[in-house]
Image: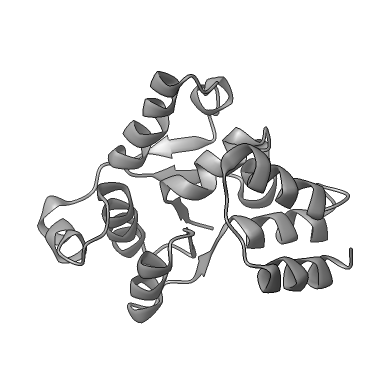
Length: 161
């Protein structure tokens, strides 16, 4: 299975101490160079990124520059644009992405996407976590992740919590 990730799912799981869930759910995760730089930049803001730098299951691969402009022109940040390009280049099974615009573009070109909440639900189904809602609350409190009440209710229902 080929899994490419944007910055947001990695950063959010890193900030709540759950980065290894990606390894448990997907095995290997591929990121473009821009995503790697964005995650490494978190250290400048005082975040502990040790679990990211130690994650041998995360592989950084450069993109082919000639397709990058199409996505960057769609007002995506560099990490999102490169993640979309790389997912398309590698014919990825999954693109891990949270942002609405990037997700919509990914779906429009036939990519299957999942965000951090879907990753948490998958981890629960696989028995990697006992409960999703405490982790969702950590996302809100520790990572500043915003969710509507409707989404919170839907996630709790999907998690049977």
